[in-house]
Structure formats: structure tokens, C-alpha cells
Length: 319
Image 1 (cartoon, rainbow, N blue to C red):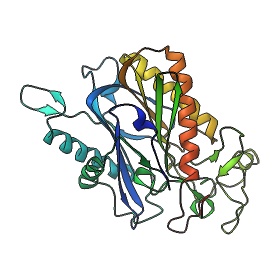
Image 2: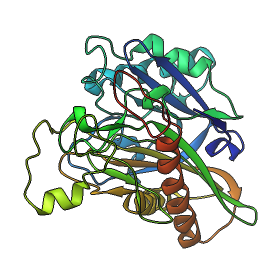
Image 3: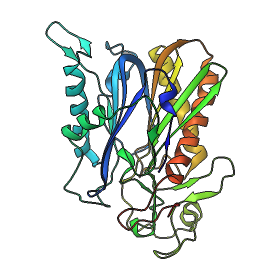
């Protein structure tokens, strides 16, 4: 694992992990406490999420205050409640006549098959992630929502490899786009620069030779053990000022990074989803921001795999 500043290079963005290495699960919060304009784009066929309607341009809510990424499958959605409780105690949220209501969209990935299926992130873990949040360097690899994340699961978990969580920053002058990605796909993870497989399905449980999932699919080989239990979750944040419509468009651009770093991607067995946050006053063309978002997401996906460490018998790129 490593600690780097990626998405937290966007002034005011803070990230916190809560990690349970014994149960092999966790959650990660992205705090934007002064309120961010946000959007979302879903490309996978097995998404688990909550509060996504608030990101629609037609929704009355102008800002969100955090995003929660969590393991635990649908049970892990409870972690967002912990973030709401934590923010409410600090007087942060959407002002109503009776109370401040924090707006916290969330998304989950499936990690129940690797650790203790009966232990999932909940409110307490969500609050702990908020307490741990920092605007400095972020832990990568086997941490937070990436604790139980794996990749290359076409032949089941016994031939998969460890993935995790990663972050990266792309810049053009004063314009910044940072990405945070929890990587848990059915497909293989690639080096976005070379296209070579970094981690993925192996030819046998005791092998370090890659089977090449795309090749196996084309050959019609068995995909025993594969279910709709895979997801890659991304958050991109920029210091540029965007409308809700533009933020949703930026979330679409973020998926270019998925395509560069995961193969196959956006399958019916994945719940791939990208959030986008506008958290600044800089001015930049949307197409430039989209280019930077794709670069940052692809780099963050590769970092998630490069910094992951073995856990629960699942091997990693690193020893």
C-alpha cells in the first residue's frame, strides 16, 4: 500500500477510509462539506446505490456534501447513514425549515465472498471513515472500500487477483481533475499506457500466468463461479465550476478511464458507476475536463492494483 495525494489535491476535498482487515471489507468517504455540484453516470448492469436522484439536473437539491463508497453489497449502503449523522452533528447539509439534511449519495461493491459475509460496513464504520478523513495523502491498495476488492473473476475467486482502491491527479495548467476508484471488476486490469495485463484471471489457482479474460470469453470457455457480484466505483473531482448538466457529462467522460484500464468492462456482471464533483471556481472547457478525467481514472485503476496486497488467500501484484 502507499499514501499519495490524488483527488485530495482538489482544495476542500477530503477522503477517509474505515477498514476491517479481519472481515475483509470497508468503506471510503469523499467529503465535500461546503457543498459540491455533482453528477453520476452508470454503465454496468449490476449497480447498487442510493440517493442518485439528487444528482439529476431536474432535482431541487443544488449540492451534495459527501459520497460514500462501500463494500458489503447492498448491506453496505448503511455506511452512508453514518456519514449523514456525522455531517448533521456539524451543521452541514441542505437547509430545511426543521433541520439541516446532509445529502450523501452512495454506491456499493460486492466483497461478501472473500471475507466474513456476515460483517458489513454500517453506520459506525461510515462515521469512522468521516472521522479519518484527510485533505492530505490517501492510503491506497487494500484499504477502505477496496479492502475486499478483487479482479479477474471470470473463472471464480480461486483464480482471481487482489485489486483495491487508488487515486490519481491529472492537470492542465491550473485546471485539476482528481480521481478515486474502488476497483472490483470481473475483467482484467491493464496498464493504461501499454495495454498489458497487470492483474486478472489466472490459468490455475496456483499460477501467476494470466488467462486473458477476453480471449477466454471469445473461446466460449466456462465462467463458473461468476455472478453479478462485480463493480468498479469512481469519483472524479475538479476545481472547475460546472452546472449539474455539465457534472453529469463529466461523469460520462470518466468512463473513458474504465475502458483504458479494464478489459472487458461495463459488462452485465459489473455495476460500474462514476460520480463527478465540481468543487471550485476555475473555468475550463468541458472537453478538456473530460480528457483529464479519463486520464486520472485510468491511472487510479492501475494504482489500485499496483498498491494492493494479498489478503484472505487472494494473491496480489505486490507480495
